[in-house]
Length: 311
Image (spheres, rainbow, N blue to C red):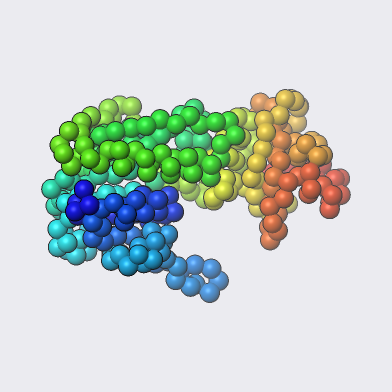
């Protein structure tokens, strides 16, 4: 299948191993990725991880600002198949209909569950016990196309968005390259999605990053690990945003306002929740590095924190 003409569309680091495999095993015509972004105080232009990998191998890179309007260069390459993964824009029908084997998408959930741009984060935040990878034919909807193949993965209690990302990344590579031959030789199966079972994983908003302690300990635990290592959960203490990176569900219950810090020792910072307490074990103050609470307590006065209330 080395002569199969492929265009790959993707943007984040999650996609890079897929791109690597396509470079090694297929005739990769071009990569389509999001436009360069200005980042940092100096607003320096940064390339997407997919663009960086493509440039290392001398692969043609296309970066349409609005792909609904700037698609001619893609179609003119006359690909046999287009493969997408976390590209970041809705693909117009004119592109979807162009390749003879269609456009397929690698999605990091068990569709129709968790359609949208943040399926890894939301799988943990919503308390799912499993997730996985789906390979699907694309249509004009958001992750609504026919399913070709799926593979499940158990979400462990100590998984964070970072660890789950890495597990799903490896699973995606394996499943895609297992599935591609059946697409090309016409033996792949198509399964319609049951829209009644659909759930959604829209991109994480700034408000969703805010931890409110008047929710359950389990919900807070899931939010903190579901936003680790990016973008990070936070709560407000003394009008400062404190990042919360790791936690454990507490075993105590208190007749205090949710958000109250009731203890601070080597085991963690214990905070009252709606139904009990939670132990914050790793945090980050503004302008400081991440630190475990067992180390954090060595440089502070505990009385400066005890009985204060997170907002």
